[in-house]
Amino acid sequence: MVEGRCLCGAVRYEIQGPFTTLLHCHCSMCRKHHGAAFATFAAAPLDGYRITAGAGEIRRYDSSPGFHRSFCGSCGSVLPEAMEAIGLVIGPAGNLEGDLGIEPQLHMFTGSKAPWYTITDGLPQFEEYPPEFGMSARPRAEPETRAGVAQGGCLCGAVAFEIEGEPFRMMNCHCSRCRRGRSAAHATNVFYNSGGFKWTRGESLVSEYKVPDAQFFTVAFCSSCGSALPRISPDFKLAVVPAGSLDTDPGMRAQAHIFVGSKAPWFQITDDLPQFSEGPPRK
Image (cartoon, rainbow, N blue to C red; front, side, top):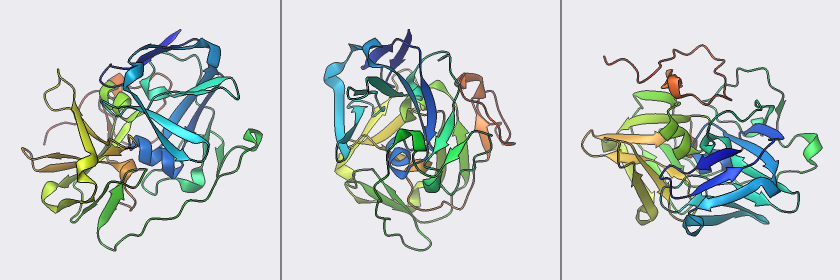
């Protein structure tokens, strides 16, 4: 039995294994929804799935015909989907606690991979669905962008933003809060001066959740679809942008892995970036 929960802890659930599949998805929809470089999904028999708390907090967004994505209405964490037609529950591995008894098996939708992320492991890669899934993807329209301006938004399109100026930091964070907040193996955040940031659409739909026992940790998300969104810190004059929410290449690449002491046990770091057990050293 593996337990899972959202960032705020309002929604909790159990999944009785064994887990049959663990895969990384790089499609633009997953990157938008999670705000991460990729989403990692774990599948197990549906009859072993049980919501133990917070069913009333679950919100759903119809992301495409016949498919929806669930999230916590209080903190935005992505939640499992009960796929009755195939008898499986498919959930974000980042919200599951402990060892899953399985390792990642493949990357899919690498044809939609973020330009700022490089796959360095030896797992099989598929440009869309693996052939055994018997499914094909529906093409998505590319968003309009402006040269020299970083742009992004949520999955449903209700919220959009743009940033003028260059980023000054980009980090992969493996702390348990980021893993739950992004519902992913790790968060990848891009840091900008907040003076160049502005919401161009839907600011009223941006919700925030602050972890009560954390000094600074706050996440922002679209209240309509649950997608991770930038968080503005007036005190530090920072715009902390989930890299997956960007429609454009920030022109920077991740500089390090931080809080690897809290890394998910099922995820292996295979690149050559510096690793820090906790936060990066202060300069």
